[in-house]
Image (cartoon, rainbow, N blue to C red; front, side, top):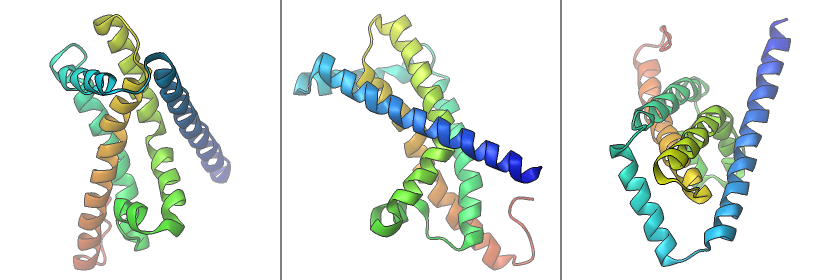
Length: 173
């Protein structure tokens, strides 16, 4: 029974992660097709992103990184238990493990990324009265995946230190 639950959760997590990645890829292609790639587009993107924390729906600038932290907390402690190198370090420096580790990250943040895409779509519709698909992807990555990368490495280092200094205790208790 527990194995079935684990497999079902694993399948749903994989489906959500692939849905998030596929949706982001489609949105990037749509953004390039609609607006092209230019210095003006780049300026607009960064201007809009910098303005968002001050406007409506600013709570997502706390919500998404907090959710990313919770996912990173779980995964970072698991990395420490397994004796793995910090996540981002492995992604950057170990090409043989890069794809597997990136896949792990997207499995952990898939729901957060989809939530971020949805919240940014609502924000753009209500505040900007238009739709910038590339900005949606960039905003979701900046608020969910980037914090996950940072937090997971920090949590792994702290949990590893805890495990070394308290060998008979579990950092999750």
